[in-house]
Image 1 (spheres, rainbow, N blue to C red):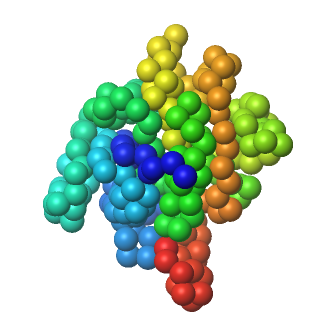
Image 2: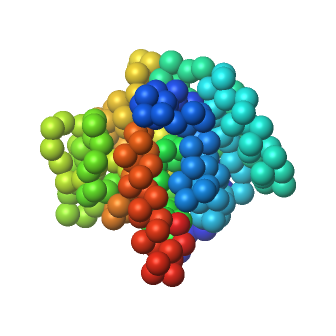
Length: 239
């Protein structure tokens, strides 16, 4: 079994327009599921997975988010980056540059799943080997713009993108050290475009399934995550 990945990152620089449209006042990272803000849930997931150092990226107006993290996680080794970026790919680059070389475990702030499932994903991803990039995928599709992934029988990813596939991306990734260093030919508009490019360039990309991940973009997603959390609690599990 491989040792846990030491470095982690949370991409939380989005604007959360759809949540605001649905009446949620706080910035997206501070929207709560079962009383716990999304950013706190993501932080605890990463440290539970064995991360020793973490970078969290908020947009320039995210001072309240930064203040929350500093207040509630004062003893944790967390670096906060505030700044507006042109895309999720640029946000990824910004956090990646703050971390030492090697593999990095990344999650988007709005990818909500039970801690046990996230830790299992990170463990299986770490076991894949130093040279592989690993995506969390889920068969649960409830997104307006899902990113389909086509996998082969051995779990390797054949293709990212298109109208159909085996599963959809679930907002958690383990990037190999080599993938982090690859010089992209363009400033991709989204991280998903960079992932698709990695496969074209010959990067070995593997998929690990998490049965259900909720992409918290809308009010109905918050309700779905709340319901999932309640079901877990009723069964004696942990959100």
